[in-house]
Image (cartoon, rainbow, N blue to C red; front, side):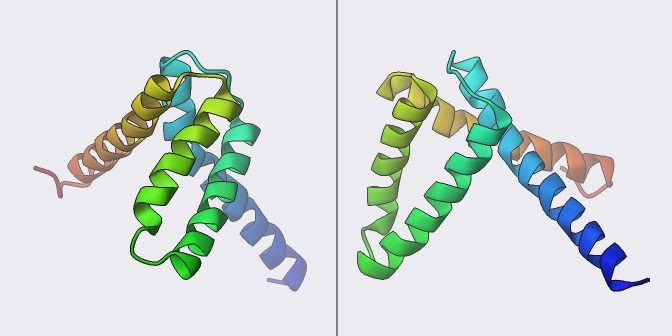
Length: 112
């Protein structure tokens, strides 16, 4: 395998991973009535991830609480939803992730 094929395969893997990781938030935002596209979701996820790393470095112990509040406000602005719906979308994305993991574990025979 040459280097071009390796770079192409890695790039494709990164794109697929970004899309798959964005799907729970995409479905959650759509379910609560927000305006979202997959590219916007990916960009918001990346932005919030970098902000979380910065908050942990500068704030320390209270970074989690700070980032929860910041995430809700970013969701409200980016997806044009209320704070209550932003909170619901935040919770729903983790519910969707839990369900997806449970289904995969069940299909692999490692489930409940």
